Length: 98
Image (cartoon, rainbow, N blue to C red; front, top):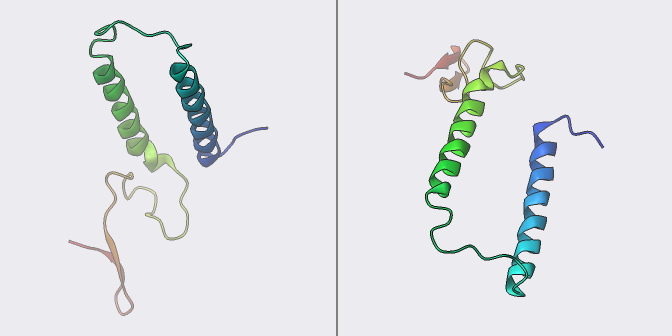
């Protein structure tokens, strides 16, 4: 099985996360998952959250390299974060909103 589209990877990762969550919940409920002492992972959630948010921002910023599809912003118009708002006026064509 090959995953070439991002939606395929996202679906596979969500399934893996769901299976891990189910396994963790079942094992923790039965006392089979090791428990860490309080404070063992001090501020790890902050570092992980920063890494995830940084990665998402980078992916959104990199979005300008995506191929042009009908109805999307033309190449060079900006990335996902920098997209210009467009309006369609049948008499004047498509123009950016100001």
